[in-house]
Picture 1 (cartoon, rainbow, N blue to C red):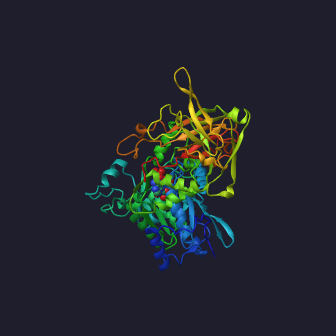
Picture 2: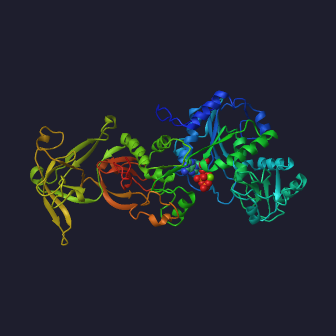
Picture 3: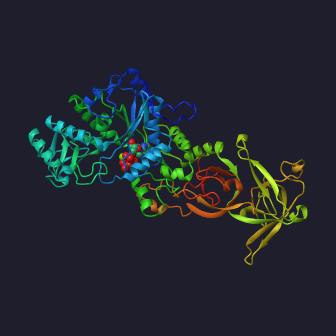
Length: 602
Ligand code: ATP
Ligand code: MG
């Protein structure tokens, strides 16, 4: 029986080995989780005991808190968890870690579902011919969490503490000083149970008391000095409404969520390393008590992904949106998955990036150029080629009428992709006037400039050789049109076309068949590689040129393209028709990235 989640198979490439794979391989060989049963859905020990052998050799989870949009760091975690599940024939759950009622919203839940799917992953598994959706909400486990809390109280392993937050903080001690027992620590289980039920029943004010695990106030690891596990908070919850006025703390809730879902490997980022002893303590106690399936899941930490030139803190991303610095969560400059999608990054490139950057035990800074390199590699093989002029100036071919007749249009063609003849050819035509890049012309050529200047010959790509004769200018001396003459018998693809040698080849778009297009030229949002380093306010290092909107011209093959189609504009880089604003005939096009690295990578 297979329980494999469907997932993209990115070629036959061997997965990059990492320490997590090594752990899973060893545990599978040892059969650590081989005896566990699965009740068909998450649940406590009794629920799973009623099920059959767990069909999934490994269960992982991606557990976002629905309090913001997913970003490139999450992509790393998603690909790691779903990728390990795929590679070991297991499943990966999508779990909304929604135990904190205050900041969570349905909007975020929906956006997370959409973006995990966009990245190519699926939490639906085929079990015995049935599709099972492994999409779960931690808030559905509040009842079991509550029972677990009462269980600890009954065993003398938890107590209600009525110290003020200040007293609690002072009595916690620090790295060099052991903590001091709370005066409420010696209460009997019966007293604690009564008090805890009062907390649940709304008898006490928010913050008046908390439930704490009773472990060791002198533990060297401060996280074991009787951590708070339940607090009073009258807040409306997006899933459970007003049913609860007490909510579990994250450190208590998360291990239980993992256990109820039969997770085998609970992978998280390094900052949770110090929490692992409590994770193990709690699940060992609940396992002994027969509440959860055993053996319990284990937590493994890996290094966070930090990407240069971006911020990935949800709080800071939210500030960028709320303060109108960007146009929304999906602004193409945002490192959110929604932003990267709109920017035109292919999902496969983001997956490749996550895979290539591996999993390690240190928080690494990765150069943005590595991500762009993955995008470029993916697009080079797939994006259709086209010509576009971004900063246009008119070029007049002054002998056109004489050579061909004023109305003549010369048909031209070019491959849609140089390595994919099956993609066919694109057609356009050369006429008496074409758009060229303004900076392809110079009155006096700088050193090494082989493009348009009086007396120089260049080829109009896929067209003819022309000789520049000068320019028309306005009263302020600005060039209003470049002038040139066609060199006869030089049409690309005709015999003898190469008889005239030129050093420069110019891209162009015909004035008669080109289409004006809104081109959104994006660049990095920040001017500093670590925008929020130290105490710096990331707002102080915004790049004023991170978005420039210009009207350029595109060749006919681009005009009729659907939304979200990628092109390589020859000489300029990769572009995508905007998934929201583009219409056939009214192109709105985003720059994905240049043809070469501009981030200083190798
Ligand atoms: P918050 O500050 O809201 O806790 P978070 O980034 O931890 O933000 P979660 O929704 O809790 O957000 O994250 C879901 C999962 O993604 C977690 O397992 C977390 O460890 C992982 N994750 C988040 N950021 C990164 C990152 N930069 N690199 C790798 N994994 C990450
Ligand atoms: Mg978190």
